[in-house]
Length: 180
Image (cartoon, rainbow, N blue to C red; front, side, top):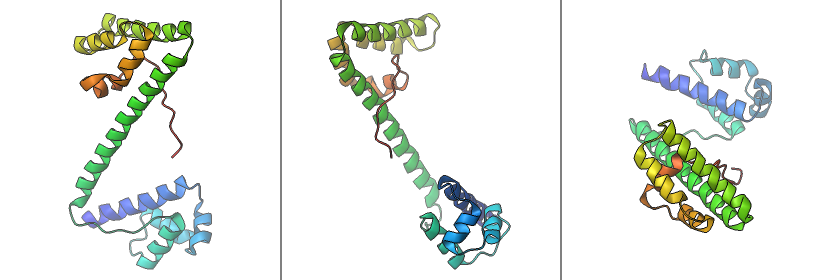
């Protein structure tokens, strides 16, 4: 049964890689030298006795590598990947708030004050509609207190609660990131 699940996963990964590269089965057949019918059977899981050379040629054509893992290693790798993705999300949120801080400092005073006022109004709504805990709301109120320059500095150094606060921001944040 384990073999069947791994085989299905391999078929799914090959089909996903082909779709991500916007290739038809015919185009992949041309690139790899494997027939379109074989690719279709492999992607549907109906070709149960696939040669290693066939998989190798398909992987080469898709820019993939074939790798082996020790038994039981996959859950640990998936956990590491999930942790890394969460770390990247936290960094993205921090980056978005750092960009916002820079924009607040460089914007015209009236515009910067309006942005902070809108954020304060969002926090008021959170409290009024009981959308967040009182601890969370009080921390955002403290962060948003004072003049715009202080708010900008506080966004750059929000303390130990930064990651928790930035998960749900009263600002409309869309961090500028290079395309990956």
